[in-house]
Length: 465
Image 1 (cartoon, rainbow, N blue to C red):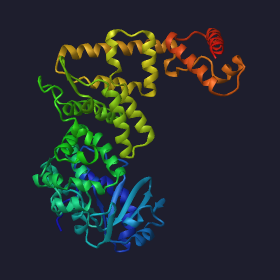
Image 2 (tube, rainbow, N blue to C red):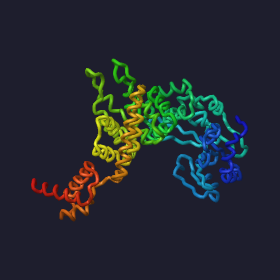
Image 3 (cartoon, rainbow, N blue to C red):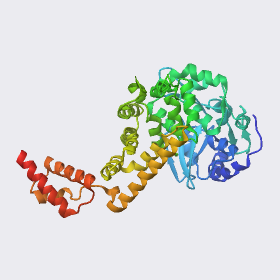
Image 4 (cartoon, rainbow, N blue to C red):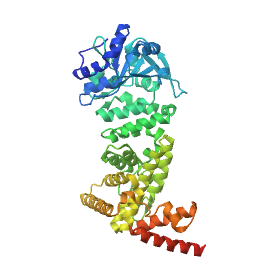
């Protein structure tokens, strides 16, 4: 068994695990700290305070439960069928898993779990060498049979076994490879890259929910484009996000403007680490391939934001995103070009509608708009930035005067029914719609004036009925 001195940063984790390790040692069971906490302790720039800890043991799930009773403040068994028992001890969460090997059947989305007694066999079934290290909590030795510490130091991404075996065990690891390459600035072994290309179709057996969660994690690394380029160049993206592949086209083959994919990934990198904002950046131009047209003035993508919003809804639905996530991202995609008409001059009415349509996502929309400018033309970039500065100043000014954040009709439903003498129904909704349009067009008028206008509208409506 390979081993070395315990890295100093791991010492902070030993005290947290001590109640559990003492219980297992008394029962003559081996217990190891494993996975990301060991890796991150070696990296040296990751905050380990309060993180959940993964442990592996030769004890079976029933025995794990027995050893945790009297030690843990809370125990949960949702992962028991996979050999995992969860526990909370002194405020920190642990997951303790029996040594295992799990292999996907070619026609199954779920792993077949078998238990083992050898930690090195368990480590061999881990995804990458940098994650295939364990700390023996009894001997305090680092178990590193596949050279993960060296690979981490040399910025190399490799698998413990042949990559075809590792990816065959769990095809999602191919997407995890993209994330680790980006997160730790690693270079993947050529055999790993080739295996990802060849096995990309195996992603079809992985659930949409797992792929969605991995995409979210991928987007939250410091430079997401590194991960996204990997999934495109290996063909992985064609299995779960084919819209990304379609963006690899030249905007204008005659003038050789940069392709839409390169632009898209640059926009993703520019956005702040906000999951929904980065998803919006990823999808914002997906409608361009379907709307591309050539004319005397070159290439155009008319209404690509509308087409893109529909495509975004469909793809995010396939990936099982929540309804709220789908609504937010597709709305931002639909609105991301609205700002560009500002150069024609906007009335206060137009500014109010922009704020109303963006709703609670106004800040995200403004940031997406700013980040969408990736031009190398410094003068144009300055002009776009200045116009957005001006728009945001006008929004702030109108907000101070008109409470734009709470934009709604000046009379509520109860007041409308009382004033017009009507009961709940369609007419109330129409009246409220009229009052909201009035608010957007003219700002705050006061309840009396809004009521007078409502009376005029109601009288005209009845006359034309």
